[in-house]
Length: 313
Length: 253
Image (cartoon, rainbow over all chains, first blue to last red; front, side, top):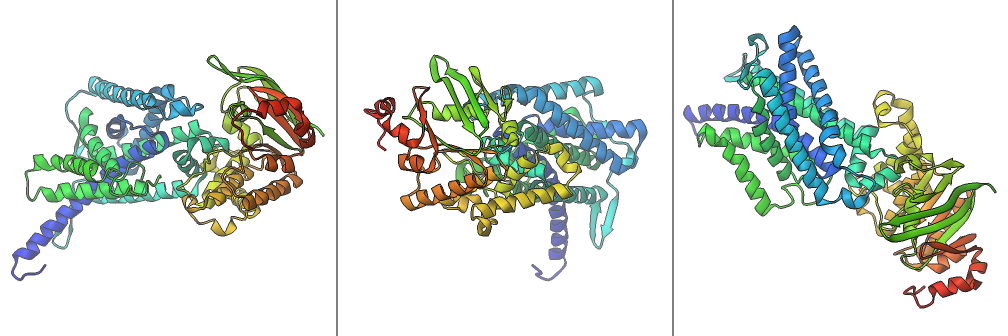
């Protein structure tokens, strides 16, 4: 890299800074993509209300901040709780009524998939409109003292404090998820249902409860992503979940639909690509990256970049 | 011998089709019972009724004197009814150990919610149950393998191991010998006999007549959803109705 002179170093610093920004936003996509992937894994359906779970996480955090100004980690806990509750409710309202798990034919039917696709889409519109009516459609600023934009200087590099929080919370969440899936009964149940729901229920797994648990876990991760981004970007609004929802969806598809590792890896690729792309193209065009990736994946890698082995959760 | 499974005038209709038609039968504790019949006789439907996959249209099924109406499959499994499938339903992308662990969780019978709270001793129970079932089926050495990488024969044993981890009183096997060669079939017969000797009651559907007749102490014969015969293999072999049911059908064996 070092070609002598000053400019290569400056370029490298800028490059590195963009890389860090990209990883931070990629981790946010990853947290959301996991929710998509988990739910797709157990039910084979896409939860189109996942972006609104993210939005609700952010609003729950903001409400807590304006109501009683708790310490930061309490804000995160409240967002997690809001996510859990939203996930639970969402499954009850938009998914369970369309599921007849006793019957394998309807379990695999397209009709069920399309019904929940529409019901979750409906719930997402209702949630967005409801928040708009209650909280207003304009941008809500996050109080100054909670903003995570304090510059942190490390050598020649400057980071925002929020990036550290995003790193920390994401890494802890991903580790906790791996532990949960591999070391606990509930995780084993989730994987079993993802592998073969009928086989799972014949060995004593309560598939309904497992599905509820999946929604709760996935939504907790989505909601925490929402509050993190809110604190980092400084404003929240009812439609904030849409774009990251699309990006996370793309990451899930790129990762092969069922693979958590694949989804996380692709979310990071996506985040970094977007951040680096702003070097070459205008900011507003960065969204194009995700859509191009989606098209490229669907055309050239129909089973996802990591989905060749059709691995499941 | 006391009755473990009682099937009392059970009928199951699918629209206009009566798949199981007033079937009654008993499996006593400690027995090895075979269920045979031509294709489409309703055997698998009957299994699905017993294991709670499909509800009965009328009649009653009792396990250990408990009426199973309204129970879900997972609850019936936790009561102690293990089951394997004609087309295997293992968890292909999980290790052999994890596959069997899922059954051991069912045996522990704890709800998934409690699982997070109290873990230590329960985890040991699950692990002990898993290893016991693996050893039973000779899969100990393959514990770390991905289930998808096992041979077909091993996968069959894996499914049995998973059911055994439930510590079932009744083990229901749906065509266990299908796809196995003669040596493997003989091996399987010995294995099932061993399980039964250790106290597991066995009910199986099988097309391999040699397998059924040599392994089972009693055989029930089904045709067009009804039970047409019930007796020892020798009695079944002489039964005129049974011969009639099988003659002229597509049944080869």
